[in-house]
Length: 379
Image (cartoon, rainbow, N blue to C red):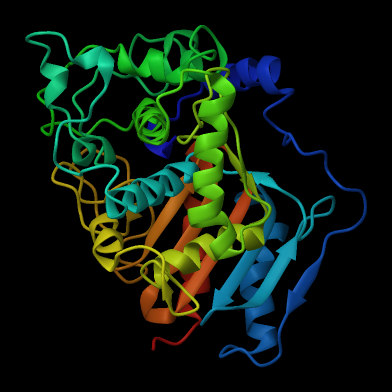
């Protein structure tokens, strides 16, 4: 969920999450005992002292709230990492909406494999009745968050947190079958004409991908088909051996919100995008797809295809990332409560910051990430 959707009602959201997943302040993976871990190499392009100094505020400055893990990769290798006490290199942490960028990559792989098409109507059975305007929705619309479907991500206006679509879909009446909840939403705009950030949209994409892999309605078959594809095409080639996606009871991957992985493995995902879909010189995905993901969408200049871009947003919209403080080609996968995979191609950098910070208090973290990027030389 993006920060512009945050409201004080997030406390209630945490209460819902606590009922469903045993607390929103702690991860589903039990915290390991013992002190945190810090590593900074002595031969990076930035001195060890300077790098240590710019990393310290993430953990020591109260304004930056709770950072649990920070990993910095330069030129494809880890040059610094630090963890809060109770966390370490082997701790899996939740993605929240960073999962959306993973979903977009998997969609791109299926397009490359010929299983899906970007600009033909998405074949969703719920939308195929006569005169249903939803039949015009394409994968491009969904990836740009411009499907036109009526969706309220979080509490806003007169909508209470318990009535907002994302909490209902993930934790209340929609949790058994998230795709059905998402796909039955009516249109509120012509497809392609309105930006509406929506976790439901990413779950629709997960369902479409799964149905491209199997005709079965058996939840276990559906789950295994999607899991095998994600592992075989993405996680294992990237070395993301810790990555574990969650599924609902209908076997749909929660591709908008719930993938668990270590900070190091999230950094590998960022590097994959920085290298335009290549791993160790092997092209795992067409470069045209990563260009598409990093191209501004028609209705929000700071959003690509399930990826945030370092550009100023439309007038009246809350800012995301840090335009003007870092190069405009910086891009990021972002998640609720301050999950970041930030990539700066000009600096050959991938930075992962994972933690537990209210979405309305992320500005100091944005500023510190921009400072961290700035200490590295451009290439």
